[in-house]
Length: 143
Image 1: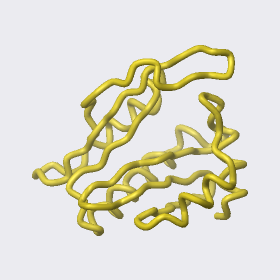
Image 2: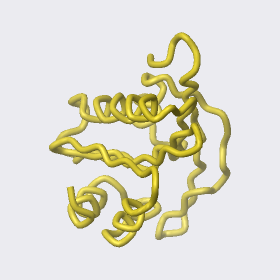
Image 3: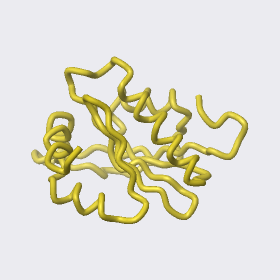
Image 4: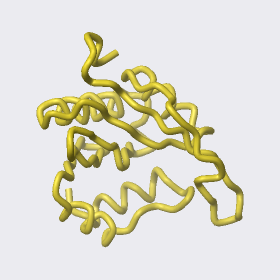
């Protein structure tokens, strides 16, 4: 998947705060530890470094949501992190994004913090970010 394809798919799934550009994706892909996982209708981008993984973004085309693609991508993120020796994985998600929160909880992520007014929409509205983490060192590494 090219940065242009990533940006086009990201535009379908994100409007707040704004979708990422092809240039931003290209820059991320050039950074050490960045891993791109793709599916026909979505992708996940994570960074794995110093024993820790961070989910940078995940998106699934609106027409393909609720069909297991998000869970498949998350499982693949966690597997890539494990293979790279990560002991934990964290992410940020809008506190009002109920479908994403449910997916992450089902994958074993738990809330560990909140960033007030972290996301800002073009119209000025703000949304908090939930910081979630997945401990990959315990006996139940995946939900």
